[in-house]
Length: 356
Ligand SMILES: Nc1ncnc2c1ncn2[C@@H]1O[C@H](COP(=O)(O)OP(=O)(O)OP(=O)(O)O)[C@@H](O)[C@H]1O
Ligand SMILES: [Mg+2]
Image (cartoon, rainbow, N blue to C red):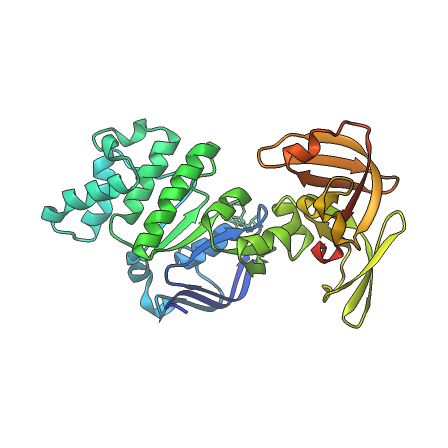
């Protein structure tokens, strides 16, 4: 395991006497690319502000770069980190002036400034903008310049609070891809707040999910996507099926009852008071055409197709039975023979179910 860059222990923040952040333990090591996810108001920006020492904490310890941040001091901590917000705060003057500014603040010799600014602009493909006025850039250009300015003094830690939220999907993917490459090449530690789970999947190797100021899940993106820890996380990742259910635990096995008399057991620990089961759409198979038919026993049910939604990679098919609505995802060739109103038999393996 690498060197710890950020360590929080027992950190609590109250706002208007209301607890808004309560982190028992969280460690980010050198070179990690971590996404911070959570619904509006979950505490993501608050956490980033604590780490950047913009917000004093009432309890607990924050350790940055191996030293107690309270003693180490705000200015020193900031020396090694950079933060970016949704709105890039560029100052008056040219793009070049903006990117040179943090170097001047840090007392970089004039003879080195031009080379460093040019290299930082080139890293984010915006060297052609150097002579432009910073207030005349498009949103995407401004964010690229903001990133160049953030990395020009080679910080060890980059804190990003949804800086790409306003960009179109293609621009976001391109900028995230450049950022990922820069971070990997320079062993830069990055904490990226994002609402968009596609961005998280694209960028991060670890996701910390906040709910009501607490960490509810801290895993790789795929685990969060397929096995969300709570219903709120399931909503966040846009889980295809969140089905109300009743659960009875006996030892290590649980009996799950879905509406319509569908019941099955599953060997897995259940959370404290589960009330729903999550099932990704690609874990539901159309039985009369899927090779998975051989893999029974499946839980099967019949239903009528109520919607077919095209998509790149997979089509979504909504099925209604008397008591249950399910959404499955299947490749286009598997859905091309289907029509609205068709009755089909579908099945799923109970092991794919995640209780929340
Ligand atoms: N300046 C403030 N004064 C009082 N309460 C605040 C302040 N800023 C944030 N809060 C509250 O703290 C909680 C956490 O807010 P925070 O901004 O960290 O959420 P967030 O996860 O970043 O949300 P979003 O996705 O909307 O940006 C919310 O309940 C919010 O209302
Ligand atoms: Mg926020």
